[in-house]
Amino acid sequence: MKRLFAIFSFAVIVSATTELHQLFKVPALIQHYYEHKAENTDISLADFIVLHYFSNAPRDKDYDRDMQLPFKMTDCLSSSALTVPPVISYSAERPDFFIKRSYPAVKNNSILPSHSAKIWQPPKMA
Image (tube, rainbow, N blue to C red; front, side):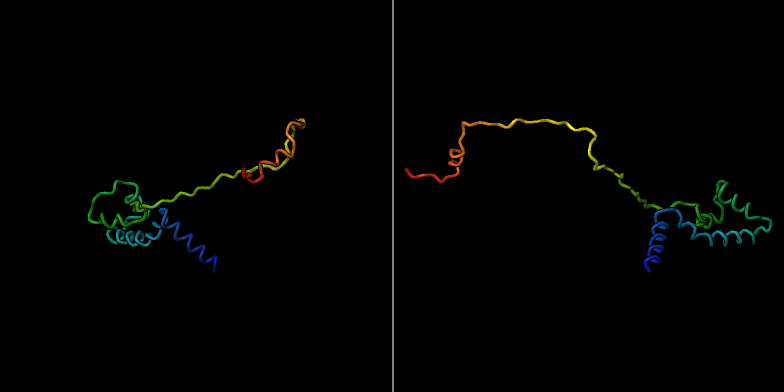
């Protein structure tokens, strides 16, 4: 069921956002070819295609019908852009070099631990 829904969704999106929906007009192309064939029995399919797609389409009596053929007019107004974020790879390996620094211990005997503890005492009333 999921696969069928995915295929259906893909078909709807592709036909709506590209000119692929023009393929639904192929029956109109076939029917219009038979209309021309009824008027002129010597016209071949190649002549029909050249007449309607590769020559300047004259405004004749069936011009409106000609404009209903597939790929004659573009009517796809929507577009979409798919953006793929770049893949950022990083390595958690250790670097090849290390900077070794040694910091001497600070020995300051002028501040006694008892004096530093007095700042955390509550105030005294005088």
